[in-house]
Length: 488
Image (cartoon, rainbow, N blue to C red; front, side):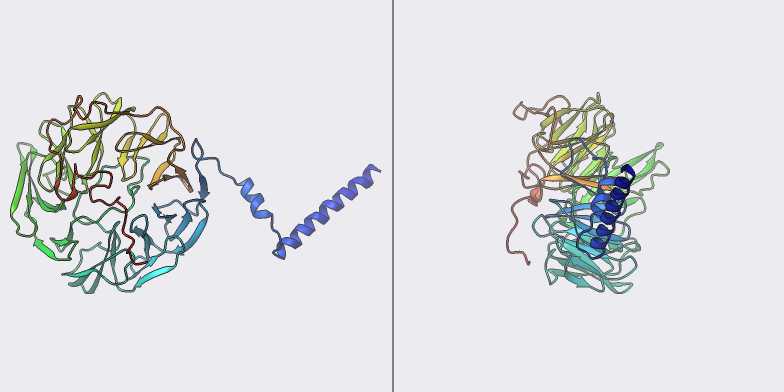
């Protein structure tokens, strides 16, 4: 009887297997993807767990939060996933992609290398909003998109677009474009950010367009007013000079060998008249290497500010518009991040990170931190990456309040208004702010009185919405409520 029962059981199992195969082939019911997902399920990439976690096709080149979507750029394709669920919304073959626009009007520019033209896609649906067949380069900003097209090698046109606009806001003539200016966001003459491990360089997403941009063309620099498209200057650097366009000024950085060291002179010029408006000497902007003082790097900084090292070895943050010292470190302190509003500084004893308001002589908050790891500033959060133990921490940059604390070895890939995307290898996940925390930072309770190591000099306020006048909207008011009269 036992043998007969065993035969019957095997018969029923075989019948069930055949039934499942028939139903799957007919498209009625297919359990295999779910079973495989259960077998292949990944371990959570953080603790506490993320809202969602997905495995993508390859290691991402960039990740950007675009409204209700997460845009993931890979080597030969780009895809978008729902910010709420992580499910794929669309996928396109592309060699490069970049996001333009703000939280309410984002678009995704995609294109192929060595092929003219690009498409602007809706980040939620993947639908094409605008197509261009001639542009060779695209620059994406929070409030503007620029593209360049060339009829001949020495006959190029730069056009500015509202991110969702259908007609250019202005066009400007450029006598050619420099070798290497192609695809998305090729380098212009500005500043380079402080970087850190485990935080992606593009974690903040697109920024507001600067008032002036410097385009390198055949060894010269063409300075373009981004409000009107007017080409203000066509400048050739001197033999010992490097040019940069920062804070609405055209900067000349001169470095010469003197007594076995590099002697620096920094002058800022009005872009309309060419007149010198301020000058500083002895500030090393870290543009030159040690061999012959040849300047091969843009100055460090962000938006409208520069980072330099004084002769006494102390780091300083300089306003690019008027040359003011907005922040001067104490002895042994180290800048780890800066924007137009704040500076994050590691204390000399390497036990704390201090957030200081630029130009305001005020410590906003202090947080205990080890000597390993770093951080960055975004419009929505200050992100710290700590090691041993590995953690990612997002803080309110104004108050130091914890937004989220994750025990993870993953990287911070993108920060948005309500959360951030983290990733490790092919795994990415989204965590909402407010998902977990530990001991908060200590806000400054001194009513603005400088603490030890606070900057000793600085003036409130700043030109053109600069430091000290940003409020909660950002230095260019890019975080204020946006108008509803956008196209689309």
